[in-house]
Every structure is written in C-alpha cells, then in structure tokens.
Length: 127
Image (cartoon, rainbow, N blue to C red; front, top):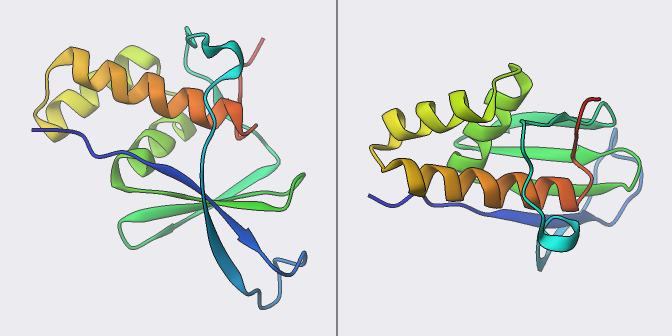
C-alpha cells in the first residue's frame, strides 16, 4: 500500500482571513527544505501557523505570509502527530501501523512532508 501525500499552496484573495475570503488554488506545490537537507528530530508547528481539520484534510494558515495550505489525509496525520510533540520515530511507527506500509516508505513520506512544511516556514526546529 502506498502513502498518498501532498502539501499544496492555496492563496486567499483577501488578506483578512477572519472574514469571507475568495480562495483560489494556484497549483503551486510546497517547496523542499532549503538545501534539500534532511530534518533530524521532529520540528514543531510554527506558532504563527493556525490549523483546522476539514473532512479528511487540514487547512493551515501562515499568519506571517497570509498563505493558506491544504494537507491531504497523510499530511494531516503527520501534522497532528507533530502538534502532539511526537518524535520522528514515533511518527514513523504510527504511519507504518495505520497505513500498513514498510518503514522505508513511512520514512520517505515523513521526510518529504517535513521538508515541504519547513520550506514553507510552517514548522520550526526547537533549539
């Protein structure tokens, strides 16, 4: 079984996200982590990012950049585990069990997701 994954950028036409916004998808994919480097320990969601679970996905809003992001089911699960303070190993074990995949596939999905989230400034490494 494969782990489906995407982090897509969605932009709001109105900068005030508390009111109604016209939301347009522009087809931009989240970028990889700067320099393509792997992230060792699990980062934490940036405090300037708010999230809301909607159906099977999650919407993230970066309040600094006013960008809106959508996570699919797998990305949403990884985001939830990051919010709980889980380690990369714990996230990997959870994905292996819940999606019935091999360790390497779970590790690749986590690395890709964390790289994209970090590249967009949605997570940060605690010192």
